[in-house]
Image (tube, rainbow, N blue to C red; front, side):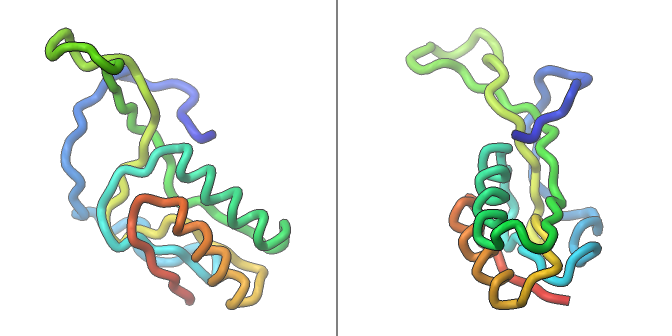
Length: 134
């Protein structure tokens, strides 16, 4: 699964999801893409699950680009532990994804195949998505 090789800080503030930047909102590599319609955190397991679903459906034809990377560490306390005592241990890495961001791009396959592959991948993600083409 995707995660950084090393990080500067083990625990970071959660922060807020705001779409102030203009990066990653247009197709850059492929002809088809999967765009997010709402802001959310997407963890590395969800990204990997969606990628595997698409790869299996297109039967290793074409090319898939992953446009997000989970570089934000999230912490969690163990179950049945009382309040206080700090943030808890590192649980997973997430990607903070603002609304309108392109998650995946695809090229080298027919439009109908790409559309169905993205539809199957969207079931694996915790956000609403939309199929776009160049």
